[in-house]
Image 1 (cartoon, one colour):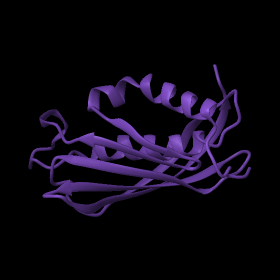
Image 2: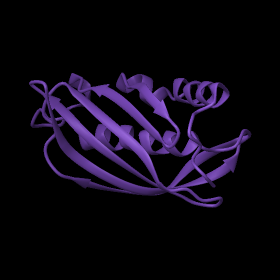
Image 3: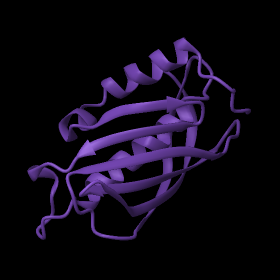
Length: 146
């Protein structure tokens, strides 16, 4: 599988419709703010209901938007009629998620017909500065769309 130079309007519409259908992303207040072939950016506010006991953004929020960013990076290069599922995902938590916003940037490391290796970098925004709070690597598998 090759990563195209430009995303087609049909693919962009398909990815955005899939993102809009995710109730978890809606619950978290997440938005798909950038989409290019093999890369995405998702932003989510660190809401009071998404914080852990010390007031930092919960690792579950970090994982959720990182997984989605990586998954939509993979979906952005899938043929029509295909979706993706995460088969495994590893997270390295690097720093507390301080601030009011998380930014997850997903990208494809290696596209393949059967497996797509992906990565997501998640940054917290505090006082206008981005702090790298997590690195995720994983594998996506193409499936037939239902």
